Amino acid sequence: MASAGAQPHTEGGPRVIVAGATGFAGALAAHLLWRHPDFELASVTGRSEQGRRLDDLYPRYRVPLVIEQLDLDRLEGVDAAVVAYPHAAAAPTVGALRGHGVRIVDLSADFRLRSQATYELWYGEHPRPELLGEAVYGLTELHRREIAAAPIVANPGCYPTASLLALAPLARAGLIADVVIDAKQGISGAGRAFDETTHLSMAGENILPYRVAAHRHTPEIEEQLAALGTRLSVQFQAHLVPLDQGELVSCYVTPTRPVAAAELDELFAQAYAHEPFVEIADEPPGVREVRETNFCRIFTAADEHTGKVLVFSAIDNLWKGTSSQALQNLNLMFGYPETRGLA
Image (cartoon, helix red, strand yellow):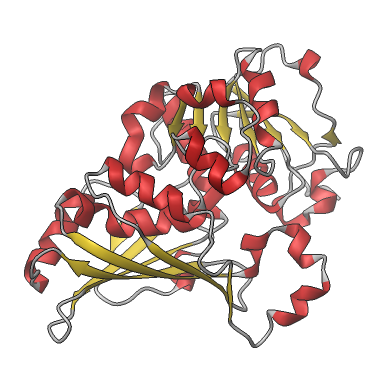
């Protein structure tokens, strides 16, 4: 079905394709690009549902384009691509697109880790390791200068996005001796495949820890904290909660020295004073406050009883955790204000 008057906002701007538009992340990326005032959504492709319109598969997104097979011979005039394939499947497509001069925002894990050895420890053999040097980690608030010129931007995982924004000011200040990250996310984080299995019944009226002591986002968080000057092993635990979308991470930090509430407030206020999508809250945030936005909402507290620092960070896992952050990065890559199409 198509919405009446569903037309792209522009033609003649940078032409972008979404490869893997049939998944949650790819479909939302297509929606955001379709309504963007400058980018032209040139094509949506999928490894399934070919011949079907995207607004038939996802009526709420109102993107009246037919899902096609990705044809590398039809990339003339395409400037960029959002690749929304799973890890290992994404890298060969990224490589093929780069061979045609296309700039990439990759939503998989294939280029998030700088270390090939670390990637292969957690994910298996890397399909295109020669491209690792071209990739920039796409957490905009930490790497915007590098992102602007990057040929490949590795969009962060949703859990690392919320966790790193929560911890970056402390890491830069050398204040983290140890940290436990207790993370909770709605079922959309597991993708369409989860929805299509009988395990969906387990999510209602329930909270489930998963990937205990083995979550693949752990090395991503550790590597980025190390780049900020804090090397440590992170205790990360994810939980599935009965929400459609939304994510809250609770970080319990043992500081390297006592930290008072006033110092903590000042540290975070200075770190994010000029960030358009990071909000410092006066009360602990909930996921409804950031639903369907590109905002990360953060609250901090100093526990005088234990001496620990508590940081809570809320995002929408499909938006700031994935697709709207991809658009934030595309804006930077093509010289637009990073709030364009998102504010």
